[in-house]
Image 1 (cartoon, rainbow, N blue to C red):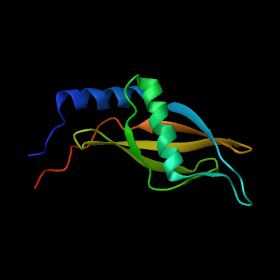
Image 2: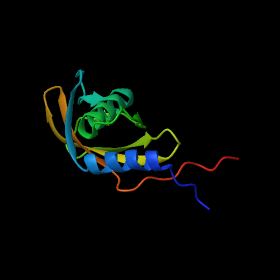
Image 3: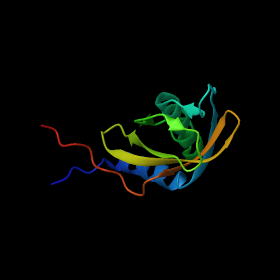
Image 4: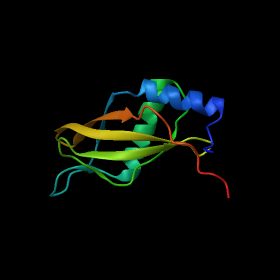
Length: 119
């Protein structure tokens, strides 16, 4: 039997999913010889702050597996982890690049995955 998130956690995840259906965001990065990119840690921080601003909730725990390349159409998947261990996927897609600024949209999944079962 899958474990369901607590009602409070479920409400938080639902608010984030509804509030972040599509949020525009941007971040400035330094450019070397190659295309601009945003480190995975900087991306996670920016996404978390934007979700908190959009939903009025505390800053969530976001992890992103890779740097975000500054090329239109580039996408990555980040993960929001709730206090109870349940997760919500967050898609990040680059919409434009202006100099050293990468503009991207954030879209949270509609439903969360339950926390892993305790052993």
